[in-house]
Image (cartoon, rainbow, N blue to C red; front, side, top):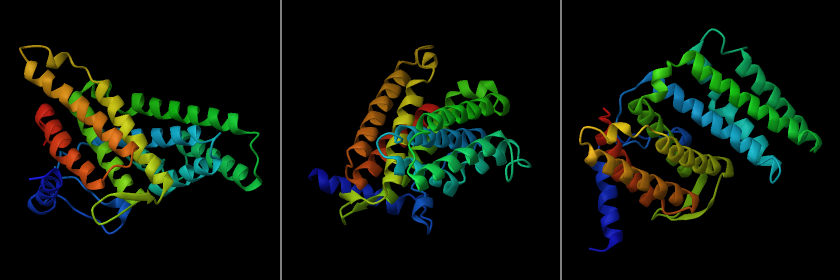
Length: 269
């Protein structure tokens, strides 16, 4: 049996056998998760924050090379409602109209729109400084509203990473044009595609930041080996996204290798 047939069989198993693969009508809201983990509020909040921070990084990183993309990333932050989604969980009465996070981003978006309209590049350094300041506000939100022990909790971190991986694949699906076999023909939406790459990269970083002491104690050699395998799978996932590999191949990697091992190592439900 050749590799392509194996891939097709595994893909069919994911789509047909596992009932938790749910698709929503809107392509950007499709859920392609084969495992249903516990709906932990802290992990949900942290993953939204990580997505928001990564998109702020993309706003900053595109400023010199492609200012239009910076502006479009700012629009996408609004479209995805990152700020209200964060504020709704930490201080719901403030989120619709005010608060430091909301006001700071509104000022940033206004400056980006003004520069885009008037083709003015003089304020790029100021905008870069603004994105850094907003990143600091998000970090302060973590300290104020998320218990400190949560940030050191590998299970919560694993759930956060799981959410980021789902978002990466979702953006990859919506950001690329593919043939019937899942091969990428072209980039359909560069904003979505950059998010897919950015979220994949951030997932690798978060995994590598985990405290591995628990895998090195009490004879947990098997767990440490599993963790190292996960690190390898994450790098492969990131490389596949970065090099626009076959969508079906990436989905198989995510569900069969990464998610199954995350679930096993961290006892996720």
